[in-house]
Length: 223
Ligand code: URA
Image (cartoon, rainbow, N blue to C red; front, top):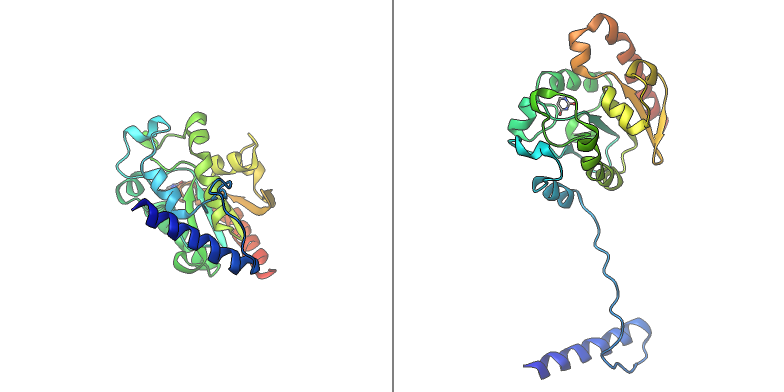
């Protein structure tokens, strides 16, 4: 049996040589094996998240919420973390805030199934919708960065204070951070308020959010 495998491998080596440069080379069976660099993929990140126990948020989750949308989206929206509806379904921004955010997107002609990838800073629901703790954010950060690298969005839109602070690397409040464009690892980033904040206080936040959404549209139209 071993003899057959050896002969087959030798044959394979010979045909590879001819394919590569048409010259037969000597093979001694001790050449360094080429390093195989596996390409990262969204599915791979998603299955790692599904099995993740890097922080305490895994203890109470019903489902992980890895994020959802198209590859190479025009906009990658990044929120804070799943709420109760998202924890039940595994889909980001499907509760009240998410339905409201869909209307924002509609207003600037962006659709989940065509233009967007929607994700969060942390992929498991913080109990009682509390803010994610710094160590939970750190534990989850690698997944988000891999997703961004794979997705290559044209623009990142962060919603809410936490996502803006984490990705901009600032402790300023969202009122100070919004209103300009940043760069996150070569990708333009626009921060705005969280839809749940706007639902709670539309008088204060509707207008600035609309300014930010217009900036998103203007940027996309300039590409
Ligand atoms: N709020 C968030 O920040 N993310 C969700 O997925 C849902 C609500």
